[in-house]
Picture 1 (tube, one colour):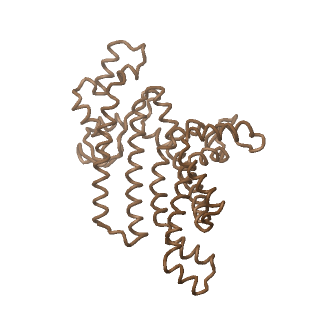
Picture 2 (tube, rainbow, N blue to C red):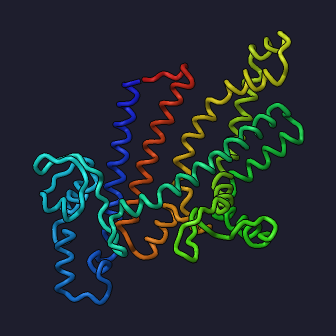
Picture 3 (tube, rainbow, N blue to C red):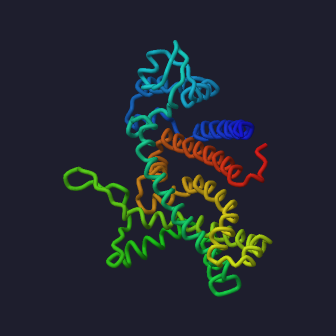
Length: 345
């Protein structure tokens, strides 16, 4: 297990290194950050001061080194720099362990980490809700399709899953929003757009869980279709094994055989897909959040792109990539635990 963990951590480090390099140099040619901070009314002297503050007057290699120093968990700062950037951590002299500093938003001037921390819980809630919907319905449909093989139930499940895999999330989101949030809203009671909290007339927050329904269903359709296909395929393979025939010969009921013996052994590839797809949903939530007005990382990033607020965009990309790496590591470890036949090395 330790060898597997070290191997995956090294893989994750290499992936994140590549992401950091791409993110930094990708946003180098999109306008002058000093001008984006001040707007078009800033005078030349003020712009030069901002460029010096953001180290834009330094060579590219030094700008990159300073960026890595900011986002790394180990950093080198003077006391004045830590106070100016509000760096949180444990320092001995200039070196210390710290929380990654993702710099400040061009628009709000707030720390990007604070902005992302406000939006992240809503994205995690949306992704988790979508995965729960996909897991419950997908496994049920997959089992039914396998048990009722070559019947209309099987054909219908396969046909629906193919459509679910093929349909883009943004298209499904628009259709669902129009049908259930606009056309039939008087019957469904669901809004066209909305987030987890809404501000009332007195400035207080009100929890609105109904706003979660349509985006969660939209985001969960694709993994639901894949889980259905995986469960059906795994169940068909398991149902033809010798121990299933032996269970029938012993007189066990069909329900016990399906649920206790067949499904339990068929869930290994399904569990791997579920853990892997959770990371996919975090990225897939971008357009879904924007369509339904859900205030998560996705909507935040799209708004930041519209406003050319590149520190927020860069921070959200790094955060999403980190989730990808962490979830994939967890998925590999869980797979090795669930199925002992998988070699840890």
